[in-house]
Amino acid sequence: MMVSLKGKKVILSKVKKNDLKFFQLWRNTYDIWKNNTQFIFLNNIYQKHWFSSLSSKDKVMFTVANQRKKPIGVCGFTNINSENKYAKIAIIIGDTKLHSKGIGSETMSLLLRYGFEELKLHRIEAEIIEFNKISINFFKKFGFKFESSLRDSMWRKNSWWNIQKYSLINEN
Image 1 (tube, rainbow, N blue to C red):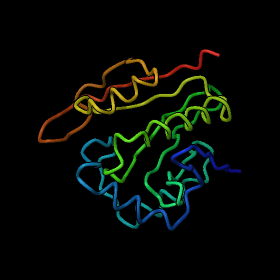
Image 2: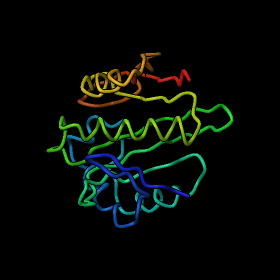
Image 3: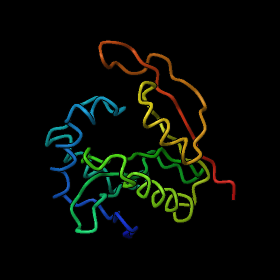
Image 4: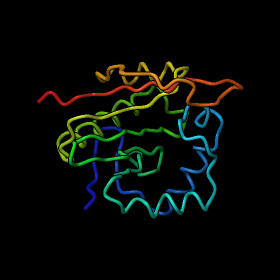
């Protein structure tokens, strides 16, 4: 059963089918797509497939909404491995006018607490394109440590780029 997580600025709640139109719009804008490690532009077929995959045990996703319950982003965990207690984290604040206003930080705090306390994860991983310095610094701010670089893993801006892996370990 999915719970809602509430902060001062955002509410994380179960993804609803109506949210997909926002996700598709955000993910297909250049400013979001260029920094995303998923390389495809979204269409209705991909969206429906992704939405149906949310019932699997290896994925927990949330719609990020403002206090008026308007969707402004998407976040969650993928590749959840409950046996080894790790997952990959994903976070997109789709409304770019809201970047650098504390929305992402509050979303990340709620998400990390959920991952460590509710999912009982020991390790959370992030994969970031090497040129995305804003995301790298954002994850470092939360204590994520650089682990490795997957050489020439992403084609963007007419060039090959490394994907950098970061992780955060629950020390408790």
